[in-house]
Image (cartoon, rainbow, N blue to C red; front, side, top):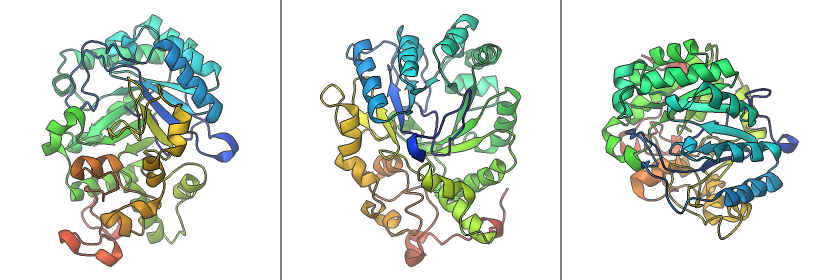
Length: 390
């Protein structure tokens, strides 16, 4: 589970700071374990009830964190899972990373585990933010999706304890057909719970998510939700971000053109301080429970293992990651698109659909200008003149 994306440049308590010399802070998600008592239908980790015997040890984890801190000062490190609280050393590792000036975050799945005492300990370990996933605004559907009766009630319990302990938290929602018409209500719920932010993850059919392929929005539905999100971001009282939807960058640029701006301020900042749409291997990396390094948690293509080579060497030198950083390496419509430098297409979704991580993004409704009309897609107009938007 990802906790921050390319837009996140919050500072101070509960936020994340810009990297050294104005460069983007590297974001590393470390899957501490795949053990989790839940069986959420979208889970990319296909979480299990028991811990894997080959998980990175505490000592190996310390070496990983020290390597990241040495080569990428100020990096954001997300301790994720499975349920990371299944590991007894999770707060020891968080405190160790914090002492190295890493920006430590924690992605929790089971609200009942967030007791008042544990929430206080999370804050004492230097964790800057906790994330938690809610995909529906009501108990019945949340409990069913997590395959866990009482999940929603437990979530409210745990989030309330975080709030009382002064530990900032953000909520995550996987966007799919079953909840796409409920996002307005979800936004209200997130605000009422006092969350510091809301991240919308657009479903990638990997892990258990393969069984939800019928829940994926089609390209036009994606476009409509993303354009609604663009409008929401302009008036929401708390930050709202999108994950695994890099074509949102195109919408920003098109909208700026409609308003007569040379480039939207958020995209200007992103290109100089932060990053482009898809960050896989390009500002973001994922370390699995057994040490495999991938571009993101939704892209199960390992470029090596931290038990064999330091993470820093793999991240910098892996040919696949170098290809991800080069917009000219992209194929299909993404390779021909005039927005490829700010978007890049979702590499995980391309891989899930075609087996080629450099193929075109299958969930984008935009046809590049020189390919307009191909595959039945038509070139979309800028946001303000598209009829029928919410």
